[in-house]
Length: 90
Image (cartoon, rainbow, N blue to C red; front, side, top):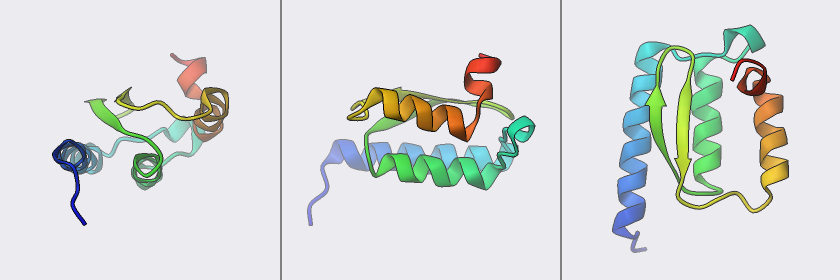
């Protein structure tokens, strides 16, 4: 199976972002979200749509979409349920 070069690039970038997330211990501890919860969520999302991780620190992961989720309302609800701080703390 041939994988498009652009997809390979996104996968490499995601792998690097996951390494950084693990190194920093990025978490949403206020909402009981641990580092591996974030990693698992990003991996699951990468199977549904394309995105680039553009920011990682101890409490934040920022992404830019290459392709949007099919149902944005459903995705927003999913993000909020995963970590309400996305809206409540900005």
